[in-house]
Amino acid sequence: MDQAAGADSPHLEQDEQDQAAAHSAPRALVIHEIVRAEGEEALSRTASALLWSGLAAGLSMGFSFLVEALIASRLPDTPIRHLFESFGYCIGFLIVILGRQQLFTESTLTVVLPVLTRRTVEAAGALLRLWGIVLAANIAGTWVFAWLLTAPGVFRPEVVEALATLARAPTEGTFPVTLVRAVFAGWLVATMVWLLPSARYARFFVVVLITFVVALGGLAHVIAGSVEAGYAVLTGASTIGAYAWRFLVPTLLGNTLGGVAFVALLNHAAIAPEIRPE
Image 1 (cartoon, rainbow, N blue to C red):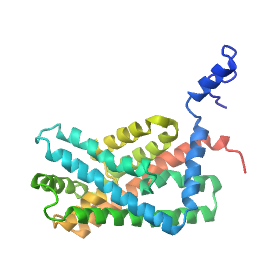
Image 2 (cartoon, rainbow, N blue to C red; image 1 turned 120 degrees about the vertical axis):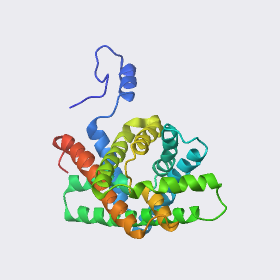
Image 3 (cartoon, helix red, strand yellow; image 1 turned 30 degrees about the horizontal axis):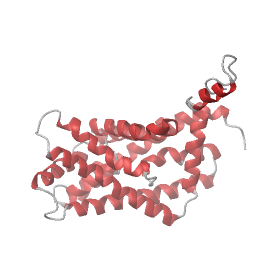
Image 4 (cartoon, rainbow, N blue to C red; image 1 turned 180 degrees about the vertical axis):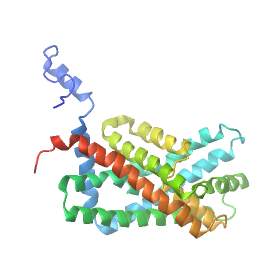
């Protein structure tokens, strides 16, 4: 068993041992239990609570799209513009995660851990219930935000042009390409959730760093991308069929696979021998 740094060290006084322990990173089992407890709490929430929190998260994610466009509209069209506009992508995630709103891609880790730990039909049913409500609410929120962006005269012409350019990205790839991009995005977002308990006061920077990588790599996120793809449909630049089959289905599958297989299952397997039977 791992021990906190400095615990029982013969070279330190008791107060120094406490200080060392307070500054050490938590064990993997501790992180697992923190994330699992968050998942248990989410699974126990009422349908209406999940619905409203999921709707709020979908709306909040729209600011990633908007702030990206605002930054892009202020910069010249150079090869490094994408580097700077990618920071705008972080805004929606910061609002959702620090505001404790319910985001589908977070739940590919948080609510999966209780299922892996309990291994009951009831737990699996609760997971599917949460996924269904949260995903539907998230998507609804993204479409509402996208619709608000289409209001005439609200933004400068250069911002509208930047919105239109960014909105083309989610449906540009083929099904397999979008699927793989989504696996990486789901993997990164779930990893971010795993890192947050040990991040402490650096939570802000962890969220910014991980989501910046998602944006910089042009990876596919089912909620953030839904605002962009929905905006393209509402402005006539794309179709609902392209939204569904070139974006939503492959991105949803990829995000779920990336979060569950590469983060939830692997991290649970690593500490499973340490979990004491209830």
